Image 1 (cartoon, rainbow, N blue to C red):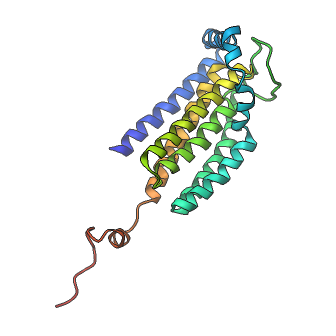
Image 2: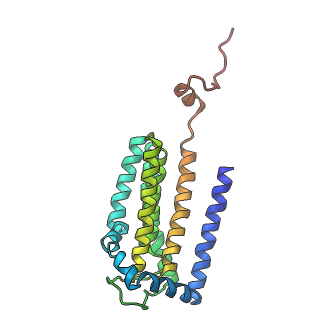
Image 3: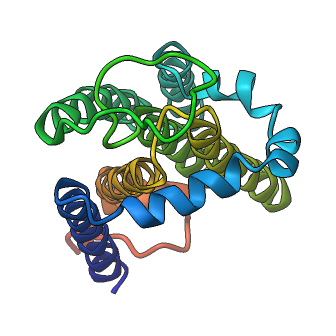
Length: 227
């Protein structure tokens, strides 16, 4: 049941990214993008969002690379170590994949407002939004499977989720991405995190003998001794 629900959510995410790409390609998202950009860059709102300037760097390639190393370390610490290795590889693959998608869609950077910082390259989807969702999402999956107290796990996961949202909003506030770029990045990243969670859930399955060793009450598959 859980596997089918994950599949449905991942498929919905893929369809949303495709739908956004189509809307962007035919310039059908301009009104939506303009409305949100003007709301975020409103003078009163913009003053409150000034802290997003330095925060955006937590979604940069350098920061995400550090998170990938941390992911491997956390996976090795809580076991099995393969979870950390797959997580780090997932983050690296996402970084390559987002660049391929950017080149395929080839959307120019926003020109609606003067950007706060200069960015080069294509705009759709937002690399910061995608990679922060993947990196911090994979880390959240690992933390949620740890043996930390449940309230600590919840606090860390919620904190990481808020960070991902703020990084995405920062790209709009800085004037370097359209809202649809960020939405597509979040969605694509979420699909990758779902895939990671599903793959590592399969990797986690241990033989019955190992489970019985950890839990004496678990059923054993050993044949009874003769006689």
